[in-house]
Image 1: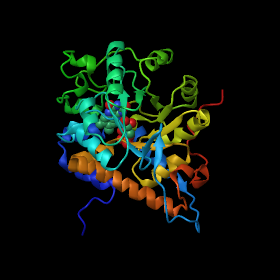
Image 2: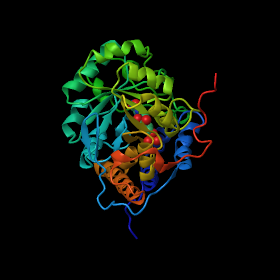
Image 3: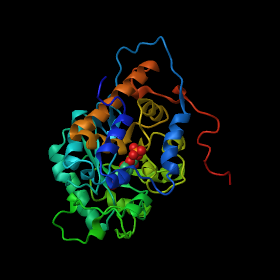
Image 4: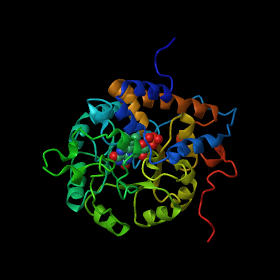
Length: 366
Ligand SMILES: Cc1cc2nc3c(=O)[nH]c(=O)nc-3n(C[C@H](O)[C@H](O)[C@H](O)COP(=O)(O)O)c2cc1C
């Protein structure tokens, strides 16, 4: 019997056995009742595939580009804080794993390793995820990211206030690892810390950015701008009008606002609103190759995984991250063959069966 993980859930199970209880809870948690976290999955599961046969699929091309960066498959790593929670080498190990799989890593503002350390370790493209921490710190972070060779800024927009997880509060979890991007800066922790630190909700109270300030942000850098966490056609419209280069449809893994639809359910209306004027990516609940195909067919250019990268890290550091990504690659590849598809860039909505009541949480007709 093989002892190797054969799917992402095997990594999840092993990570749960490996990690200290509180660290596991922090990674696994969602906001409140975790309805949205579950719905991210059930919404994927409600979609079916409509395979086509007797087509030439011996050679399947999984490679694509994101904002001009070539990647070997349309699966990338979502930004997430504190990788040292899962492995002592933290984001440096994650970057190595992503590089081994020749794909993109998005690095969180709240990383334990600094962006310069990660950039040194990376062999694939990097994007920098920005949490606005006030004008001065944001400017510093953006300039450093550009200098360190990051290829885009990903502004997370879905976290106007902190979102402590109830499991963290119950466990009285505190963050102990340093925030590498602020090393040596002599700032109080609550000015620089992540959005879900506990106890006491003692985290940054920085006023969030607003649409009118995006011009200011864009003026700081030549790098393209992606907005992460857009959930509606209305916001997607404004985003495109503001000239953003990419939109990452995401529920933050259900970790911030509970009681929304699953991310995949938001994708069709957003793709409709964007009309090809910006690239679209999706994260939240992606666990299978078929999920990737569903998201791409409905308008995403690539998908990102969050919790699974921690599972890989916890099980085997850089090799574990690589292992998770390679399992995804195999599954995407096989699903492509079974669906009669030769290129990930050619997937279209006809590939997907959508139940009539799916995604029906849209707006009321005014
Ligand atoms: C432990 C953890 C920390 C995270 N930290 C960040 C972060 O610092 N910035 C951010 O934009 N998203 C963060 N996220 C959200 C991820 O980028 C992503 O949206 C989410 O994990 C995707 O859902 P999935 O975990 O179901 O794949 C975090 C997610 C987890 C699990």
